[in-house]
Image (cartoon, rainbow, N blue to C red; front, side, top):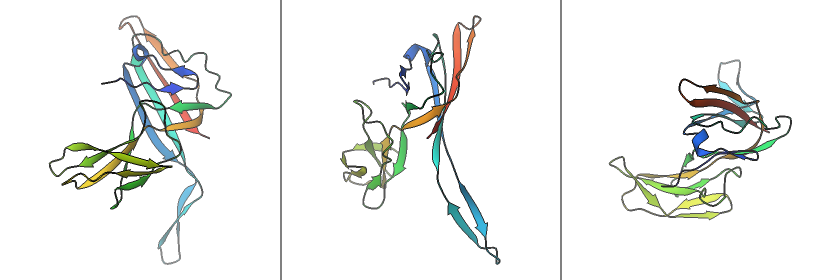
Length: 174
């Protein structure tokens, strides 16, 4: 198994600086539910963006102290996201995804016993199609998010008692 790494701008997080790595995704944006005179809801969406909160612990510092937070950076995740495929085993992947070697999208067939089986994936542009797997109840298409973002100043702390470091950074898609 290959250990995957995240990138924040020019910094590829060292494995020893991110032994315990968490990346949470949060969609945010201009949306509200309006109400008619009868009380029926109408969803209004103007825009939405992705916020990644990346935190880690490790034996060495993550190397983020020199990042220029006054410019936008490409933030490449090492934690996959999944989209459930439609009845045709297809899903449209976001254009904002990693495509570098080792981070290509892939598909799983969801089996009745709760297991997953790798399914071949065909990718045409952003349209992903999983190959048929006998007995599958559904399919997931997985990919690694990558966004261009404004990043927060990193919070970094070191502990002599535990001989470790912990850190966190927030990236909001532009």
